[in-house]
Amino acid sequence: MTVHEWLRAGGVDIADGVELTPATCSPPGARSGRYSDPLIDRYHAEQERRYGSRSGEELDEERLREYADAERIAKELCRRDTRTFSVPIDGRGAMYAPPGVSRRVWRWEDDLLGGELMDGGLTVDRQVLARNPWTRQILVSGIVTILRRDHERRGDGDTVWYRARDAEPHEAARVLCAEATWEEDPDQRRALDEVAKEKLIELRATHRIREK
Image 1: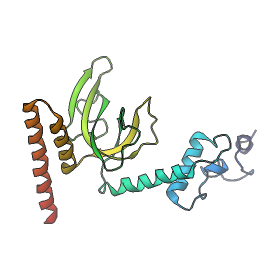
Image 2: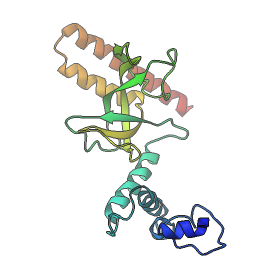
Image 3: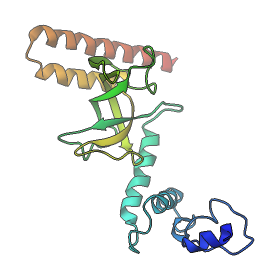
Image 4: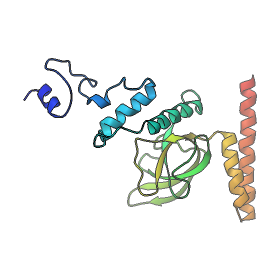
């Protein structure tokens, strides 16, 4: 059996002698050009390659459009060359964390890098809350701004993964002020208030530099 025959047996419409490229080796539904919107077209091709035709049913165009719109919004929420990373959110509100909202998140990271960050993210108000000496992992928290759902990562149970970036000073200040409001320990509340004030001072200094 030739490569072309093997591809045809798998449902790929390809003639003998045709150059083997990602496009010609993909099933018809996974090829580009089905939708005029390039982002929707790309998401459709990716899902077709990953999940197949779902027993002959058409993929949900409305959901593909949501993915594409979310990616556009995510780009608007990021400055040029902003580092993004994946974070898990579980429990109440995990299924829908709207783009642009800032919140504290928690995740386990490998503690094998000698103090280096796992992916360069989760640096704002970063706290190491626990260590697991058996797996050499640390449980860390930080303040991020949600960009969009991370469709490359599947959640487990009620956990949903999102693409995020580190929160900017004014975004982090809002989260810290909210945490201070619900903090019962007066000393801890004052400490959170001071951190929030520092973030706001940092924000004003950043704006002055930009204005110059």
